[in-house]
Image 1 (cartoon, rainbow, N blue to C red):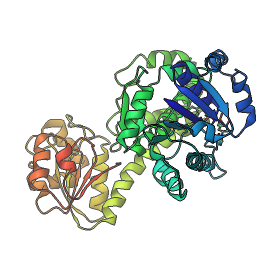
Image 2: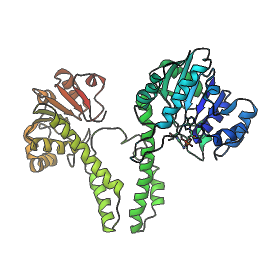
Image 3: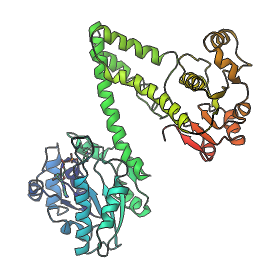
Image 4: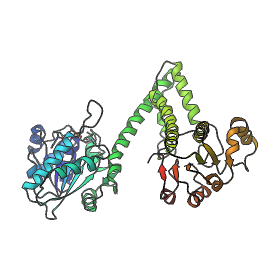
Length: 440
Ligand SMILES: NC(=O)c1ccc[n+]([C@@H]2O[C@H](COP(=O)([O-])OP(=O)(O)OC[C@H]3O[C@@H](n4cnc5c(N)ncnc54)[C@H](O)[C@@H]3O)[C@@H](O)[C@H]2O)c1
């Protein structure tokens, strides 16, 4: 393919050199001659191990070129990869000026040069941009340019995951290759371009691809701060937290794993809230702030409050709550966020009927019966043994229960509105009119 790469910083120069090494005819474009000059002379414009050699090879082989003139790059090109900077503004928003400019440069250059043989050109954002940028910025700029000659454009987001300092190794071994597009031709072109990489090319919704990069970086930042907060508190207790974390990461079931990373409702139960409070208490004893962990409790609280607010903002006073314990397959009600939710809604005067497969009036015995009777007497009155019974006459269902009886009750007795707190209700329930995910 002929590939134009806009922006020859860390991402663009690595991408350009690696694609040239893979046999493509690559034209790098930058507005800054300090980036273009070194490449034309066979050097890397940025410090990145191994890149100097790869640039030299590409230039010598005649497969890698650099220019300030977008027309040279666009002439007959199949794909443009936009790798320009997307810095923060003073308010923290993302400055998309360079993205707009690059898209405009592409569209205007296309008017003056020959299209590729297919006539079709993929414009692909590799820079990190907020969800909606391809739809609302890239597409809009293209629509504003009146004439792009014989080029037909398709757009996509394909985020880059390399780290500076290991850019080449990361480029060749990415965690995933994700192409967000609704244009199948762009999906095919990028599958051809990146198909040589070890990760499978996943074609997804544009906004998913845009959000994914932010999710990754927010998580990475959280990991760093988490490890640092562990160090900052436990050092007062003579603990070497490097050793703690060395062992911590060996748990690939719950610690370093997909577990606990599905959006849904608040955490709860007999351990997480209590133990988080203990760590925060240790911090207070030592005059140490742990804002990440304190913020974790705040976020959890906001998750419950958000659902209460959504209920209050909607119509109806009859509510079915399906699922009461903090997770499925347990009858432990201690610090269940669903109990908290129920108590707040009852406090606001809503009529609740609650169904839980395990916390069931007919099954409540021993310690749990005593717990419900002593701590939650008001909930005992509204517990039903049957999900259909809970749903009868309900305006709204709040659902964390995922057992088959709850699902089939929802399908046979659907309320006007369902808020899914679990994300595991299945496609049939999600297709019901009035379905809302708690965070999707
Ligand atoms: N640096 C990283 O490790 C990394 C990793 C993944 C993703 N990203 C993202 O990739 C994007 C680029 O990052 P970077 O670190 O390579 O940026 P950078 O600042 O090193 O390079 C950006 C380049 O774009 C050029 N440019 C600006 N407008 C242009 C235009 N209209 N036409 C051509 N060139 C233009 C600039 O002159 C500059 O050389 C950012 O969105 C960044 O968030 C960066």
